Length: 355
Image (cartoon, rainbow, N blue to C red):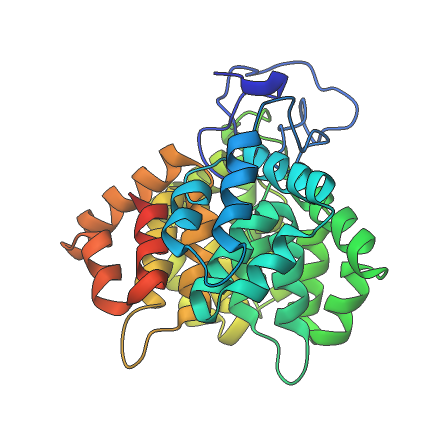
């Protein structure tokens, strides 16, 4: 389906579209090949010419008058793709002269509210609000920055930067700079420069071997550690290249790249670099692990759980892949795991997103 005349949906949320431009001649605009399409909801086309009257009326009715019909809100909103949601929100706001997101905020509460607002805003606008919140006040919530920005396509990063500027009248770059320090700041400047090789750039064995040598240099395998060099190598490659680098590294040095990143770095830089490699090698598994991390141990990290479930749910195929990986890694059913950690309308919303 190439619904709504939009670019064909990607295989995974925020992940490369199917290959097929292998060895294509380099084009202007892309790094090493034709540019990767933005994820659904990150392209220039945000809404579609589809009839959403029933959904708009349903959402309005669920919040009108005394009390809120939470079940109706879950049913209408939890299974829509980004273009459908953006169309419903736009039409709701125009026809009713109201603001759907503000109405959802007024009529619901707690993490249920957070989930509905994330869905109602759509993925791009949610990303920029979550980034801003992550940098507000004391202490940056680094994991949220990583969740949103690590391993994204150039097109998605550029869309996020433009939307951030439009929404908050300041640049994402300047906010990141004032919030991060030293090495992690430098790493994030590389990430948001949106200069990774496009997914159409082929995996060339000599390039991979060269990258492994540079990595090992940077990791202090030959002389002292050079963090900037490691960041430069890893942030400039596409997922297929990173996967190949990971395999080649293991073959040459008989240890996993992940274990070396873990022992060489610490804190935020370690987390971000390991996530970058994990998402490139198995994106669905990486998200399954992050879902478990938001539920493991004492107390559920609900803010993260909501953001992560909603982020995965925008692409149904990807959500299913994450559920399958969750079962494979943890021998548990993701829906049951969520049901054990949440309750009420909040639980019902997350389950509807996953199922």
